[in-house]
Every structure is written in structure tokens, then in C-alpha cells.
Length: 392
Image 1 (cartoon, one colour):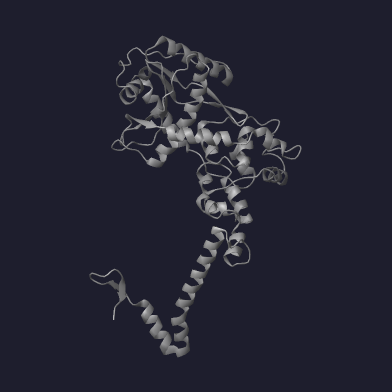
Image 2 (cartoon, rainbow, N blue to C red):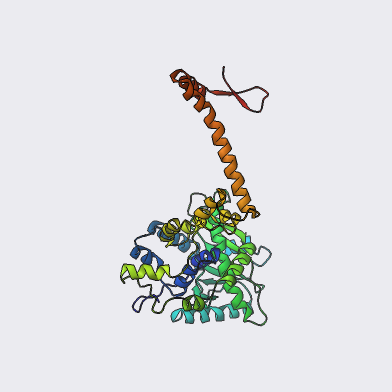
């Protein structure tokens, strides 16, 4: 479906977190399942997106990660001991197994073997860039966390290294939330590996977030509880329609190769239903294309999911306006009743505002001048009062 000569783009934890945040979007599910490069696809559709990290941010992040993992991960293990497991023995002489193997399947098998051996051996073990696999709607996604730590008690912890700063021990809540959702995907993948062992080792739901301290390049660590994010991600991924079902409903020969005829490519993309929401602008390369289509269709979802949920069965702006004017809709529907009441209040407010101006027009130029002066009078608060009155 992505084209005979187009290489597959692998899913990562960030893409899975975004997919789980919008499980109703069949378009993203089929494109991600087929390994389509959505950035190239968006450019071919004429709606390129600036989504993604800049080259400067990538370079800075790689440099910071190399510093954190220097000296066989001594500083990283120290932070893991201090933030996640202070009661354990200090991580001196920790093991660093070699995880190199051929292909993602080989690396996944090698990671599972290293985790099993480290759990049985006891002590501290640091796995640098292990490879994990997670089944998503019938498609296997290979994930590569920054690191995984095996504790002396046999439990496993995810380590997430980010380049945004931690100022006075706290970081940007929005960025921490995004990192927590990404780490929750790794936790789910680790749980699948642990479930195949007997006995199954525990996977900790407190992950280690490592960021630069203040404005320096020194690493600082914080324990982040991802139980909520893990539960939400697991539930949303389970709701995803299987890729085979989506593909089975498409016309024969549907292809998303970006080098094909633009009209054919547009028809192929439009054959898959999408669920656009403003949040897609920060999570999907096709957001600009889907936003334009959503605007053209008058979809209410482009105004936000909360508003869409409140409007019930009114899916388009035209339906909403018709219901507010009393031209359609069930009067017993709470959404329709609220819209009609809002329209009535708006009409009354506009009518009241129009009365002084209508009187001024009837009084001629002198009346219009007085109305203009009245409108421009400054307001001041009345001492001890709750409102404001016009100055005399």
C-alpha cells in the first residue's frame, strides 16, 4: 500500500502515543500500519507540515544523551539508584550487555535474552537502546527506549532522556506529560516481554526522566509515575480497529506512494476516513491536509473534541446553526435546546443594544453625537460597589 519501491517507516513510541490519543482516526492507523512516510505524503498532497524536531534539537539531544551515558552509564545508574531505588545497594560494577544483532527482530530477541539473564543474575544492569516489540492493531511496532535498568530485586525500569531543561527541580508540565505518554508505551512493551518469563519480573510504573539541570549540561533526574498514562494508552490501543479491517474496506489497488499522480494520491487518502482535531497539529504530519478537508466539510471536530462531545449528533456547523434557528433537530435533545436558548438570548441582547442607536438615528445628527459621546464615556468603579457606572 505504501508503494513497491518505498521503504517502510517504522513506528516509534512518540507515533504510538499520538495514535493512541486519537484511536478513531482510521487514516492514521492504516498509514502507520503500512509504514507510510506521512511527511512525504503531506508534501505530495500540497500540505507540508513543519511537525517534528529541528536538526539543532536533535544534535543537542544526542550530545546530552552521550554525556548522561558516559563512563559506562555511571551517572545514569546513580540517578536511577537515587530516584527509583534508594534502598538498594549502590550500582557499582553494573553489567552492560551487548545488544547488537541483525535486524529489528534479532535485536528484539537479543534484548529479551539480556533481560532474562540480568533478572536471574541479580545486581544492577543497564541496557543501552534495547529493542522492544509491541502489537498495535495487528501490526508489529519495534520500539527503542533510551535505556532500561534492571534493579537488584529483578524489577525493570524505563529511562527517558530529554533535552528540555529542569529548572529548580521542575520541568515544563506539557513536555513532561508528552515524555510520560511516550514512556508508557515502553512500559507496555516491557510488560509483554516480562509476561513470557516464568516467573514474570515486575515492570515498574515509575520511570526515570533525565533532563539538563537548570541552564547547564549537567544531568538531573526525576521519578515520573506513568500509571495513568499507561492505562489510557493500553485502553486506546485496544480500541484501534485492526489494520486488516480498514484495508479490507478500501477500493482494490489503493496505494499511498507519494510519487504517483496527485489526483490518484488524493483519492486514495480520502478513501480512508479521518478524525481531525486541533490536537493533531502537534502530533501528525497530515494535520494541515486534514484540517483543510475538515473546514471544507464543516466538521465540528475542528473546533475541539470537548465541543464535539457536547453537541451530540450534530456533526457539522450547518447542522448546529440549523438546530439553533429551529429549522431542524429534536426539541427534547439537550444540545438542541441549549443551542436554541443561546440563539434566543443572543437575539435579545442584539435587539437591546440596537435600541439606543435607533433612537439616535431618529433624533438626527444631534442625537447621533450624543450617542457617540455616551458610548465613549470612561467607566470607573464605585467604591464599595460591585459594578461600574459611567462618569457624569
